[in-house]
Image (cartoon, rainbow, N blue to C red; front, side, top):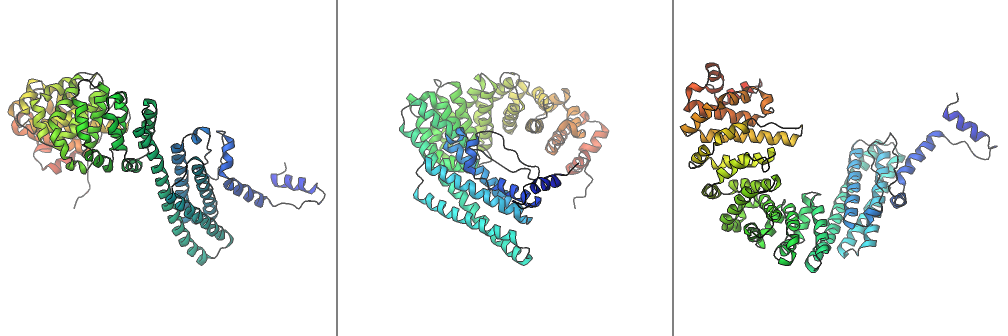
Length: 531
């Protein structure tokens, strides 16, 4: 059987010498280069037809811009930006490995994508003057990158290639920075247009569409949320929430606001325009739909998250805290579904971290009975995530002595033991982590409440000790969580101090008598030396 090469040579020789024989390696090189040098604009006509990628280049990103993308400037920008960012990342990696052919072909693709993006955007929008300067500078740098990478293909001089590598790295860094800044400016321009639609339009459908586009953008990361916040979206959304004629848009606007407030810029703007007062008014307005109040609770949960450093500056929150906490615990009590309860309880959980006065207010509002009753209602508390919020609130309330009576009256110790048995129903890592938090905080709450001899005796009678020992000794029961182990050891030691006879001799020798760190190492089977 003839090989592919001899077959080609036979066919070429039959053309009576009018054409020279072409080397197979050259043809392969030409075909490889052709694939990388395809103009991005030409892909538009291909619609969504599949494009093959050879096995030699796994992971190559080829994007066709179809009709759906061209109708949406924002999505087009984000998709093209993702393509260019991905290619730039590949180029940095290939440059480090000195894969010069790949470096050059990637540079060609980056240039094509950037040129296409600028052309598409200029066609759809009139770019600001500052952005036009960046466009021109970026195209020049891309051209320079193409030229310098091509030079590296035609030499094997190691000294020359080393100097070129440094030069290419510098230009590539400039291209990356310039591209990122240009995209930020383009997105800011598009966001300004959306915000003007929200502020200037009287059409509910038009405003709803603009809000939906903003919400979609917030899902693309905190950097974009910061741009959205800086362009005034918080002010525009709160303006909607303050007008009765747009009451049907409240929930939609609040959901978008919650997403924007995942960044400090959003929270700062919210406070500057008395947004917390607006949220408090919605939460306390019984005429507002439950869905709207739930979304307001979601915003409250977001801005009071312990992960934010700026929450300490929310002075206006302290002024309205009594009304907010009252409204949230009321929403927990009346929640018609698990999602509403989750949002309201998450806000309360964060607030109990935010200010200790909130715990005193909650106790006055009979929060313990409300929360414990909700735990027994699968319509409201149906996931480990909701249980995590409930037990977080209980753990923070248990610091106060007056919490003990409420827990005993509502048979809260029994519920804590139920929570100590919480296990994931799926292999989801997030659900597993939530179950760990539930177990840990249940043990912490039990340890704090067991300061009272009545609680300790009740826990012992309900066989809390065997379950705590099981969690300590069996890593699988606690999902190998060290935090659960520490909490359970602390709870055991508290119970042992109040009820010494509740723990057997062997368990006492290993889990109670040694230092906490020694018991921890024993139970976690850690043999390393921590010197």
